[in-house]
Length: 193
Image: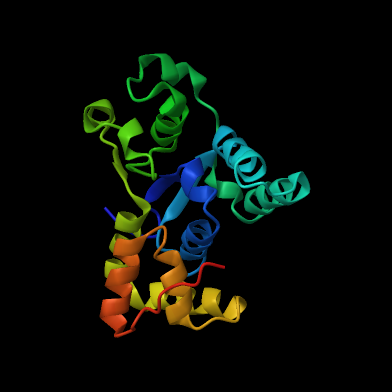
């Protein structure tokens, strides 16, 4: 079920969350713990969220999209609009389920679990999981790799690993708690900055 070739669709809400996205993408680099998948529509939705909801300048949102396309060309799945009419999950996220079907992915990682009811996914043998839950799975499979990637991310930001994990805890608290407990870190309360 898990492994470097295990295909996982990352929803736009995951890709738009800078810290969570960075960790997921680093875990998809060597040594790769899973194989990320997305469609052009998911990438465009992410860039739109960067611009319209997170108020990032257009050139930065476009730069992010180009960099992701450049570094993960194998992640792009061809659009599959013809599947959407037969799907019964939330209409605004049918394209995400269609991407998972087209990619042969068994998992969709999303903060919007309500848009992917188990009944709507069952015919396709796909399940949706919260990013924290999938990160916990990856940590369980390869704790050393996950902690090393977190440490790299912290170092890139001139933070201690504990402080960076505390910042990630805002979005994925269950994951942060598991990692902290496993390595014996005391998570400082994140500053409001």
